[in-house]
Length: 508
Figure 1 (cartoon, rainbow, N blue to C red):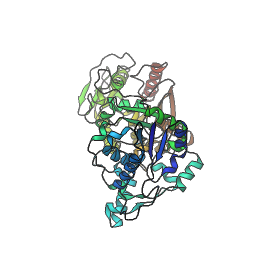
Figure 2 (tube, helix red, strand yellow):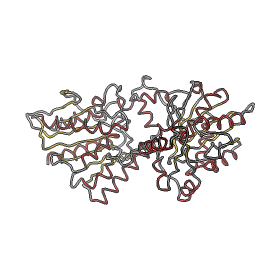
Figure 3 (cartoon, rainbow, N blue to C red):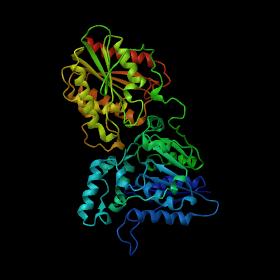
Figure 4 (tube, rainbow, N blue to C red):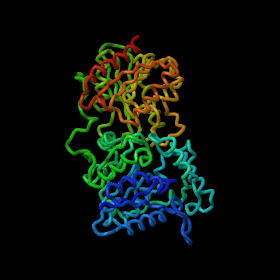
């Protein structure tokens, strides 16, 4: 028999598992929902301040109570709940058949759960409350979110109004010690098979995760392992409330060892971002200066220019660097063949906290390009890709007169819920109303991941509202990064249309 031990996240308790647990039980599994001290149950007499070790002890008690010959224990941790799950599993590794990370991060030894809180302002509030309590880590509580503030902790996509009301009504304060005390692991838990359930309205799906592994993101290397599998659920951060039956089915399949396994980087397969560009573009000489490459057209100039801005985050160790990736070099050579200077560059978007630095890198590169006498400084376009999309906000807000067009391929056009960038200036949807008549060309992938597609839909709706000068070029069968994936029907035509649209605004 499979024995599921379910551990809920911050502010919540066993009640959130009710429907999922019922379905698992109906399928013949044994189910235990852990009531964490201070959340699902009051502290016992004599217990001091509640911290992470308190919650690890709660999970250990559940494991020991459920441990029977022949029963395979599957620990499921949602959100904050993965921290006590890992702490307990590390001490009972031989008793655990599998750990399921339900829309969680990857906790590491010595790192407190606070580091996984997406919103920087929330992290600062926790630290301030701990300092104000006078007991530091030992005491104090973080009040549960108000009804309208749950989205600061994760996407509420898929939650009914009733579910959101219930989540709010039954929420409990989170003991600060549970967020501030570092997780301590011996390493024993690394031997336990793991499954990740990715809620794609809140963060990346499997395909995006594979891309991140391919570019060499250090923190994700361990995920490309035969003992680690993944599932997707098209919902927000609380699937036990938004789709309990689908979650139960996923957990049953996970317990049996199912799921998608990622391919390790350097396994002999060419990663998607390094495959050939979908157009057969002739080679062209480039000039490399600092972090910028210039592909010049024939003739004396001065020529209009298109600056191509890569996405990310891309780890600093990635080789080749983005300005040498086939998509960027392909577009740059293509426009150079049509009389326009193509520019690629490397910027320092190595983490979602680096958008300020990356935006400054882009601005510096643009000014160097405009200062080149072979470039027409009054006719420049900026073309952004994927995670570079938030940087467009810098240019949509009071655009300079020399900026003739902004283009974006499969872009992220608002901070994703898991980024914790509440109030960030890198929010193109909010900036669009200040763009005036600046032409914007949007290349939209029909098979885009859910969390990115939501930002694009929001951007298009805002363009309709404020009357922005937006042209949309759809690639119905295209995926994120379609230029180097299997070319879908119409993808080449879409690239030609997009290039034509941008160059028309430069040359017109």
